[in-house]
Image (tube, rainbow, N blue to C red; front, side, top):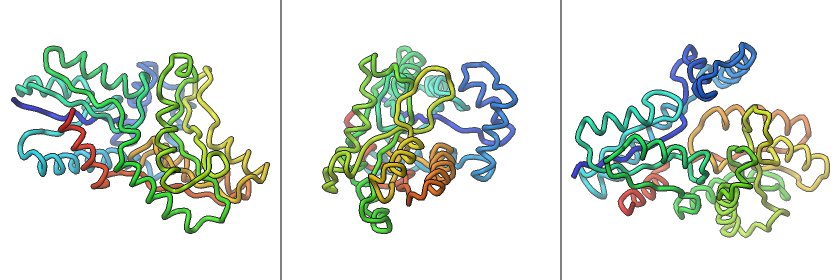
Length: 299
């Protein structure tokens, strides 16, 4: 049997000139207005012109391949499929079919399941696969190795923060209708936060909470509170002497971390006079990738 791991991620434009096509795909084929495009280009320019996400994702692929080769030599080939840029999920699956792959393990580089996010990646995989056997990994929100990584990241950052700093765990906001759908996404974020808080002995609300960030620019309501609202609230009420953001919904450095937190939220906190920091994201951390390799083997 020939087996492959389809490692999936959101994707990012490879060059500045690819931004418009990328944005159009995100908007389901509707080109952005000149103002919308200019705003996105401005944000990319602020982090150096393009996101490092493509390189980070390739490093994750290489790390997962190495971890699998240690456990099951020559059994799996790890390949990438993206939601919004080439190689698209469907194109990668078609390539695997052409090369005679019998079985695919589908894994998304996002720890928290929602039907609107991870669920869409997995549906696209199974629909494209047809008669190829597909095993799916839906969630790794409470994967012990990931909780270990986040716990260490929080400990490392808290050392330099004022006593009384509040720890806030964030993920990408989704349309608020997910709550009415009975979607597990909100609970999944909280389960990750709870796992870290329990290891550190943080008290609910007084010392830690969850929030959302990077909401889409659409008319419908999105999950909140937004991290910028949290900054205003804590600065205005004095209920914390500092704010440490743990962007646990993101596992690689990209625009939502490098701009939305490192530039936009940092500036908002500075204006409010609130000491602010954020923890590192996993990127190609060997411990996390080893745990994901074990999940692939047991899928």
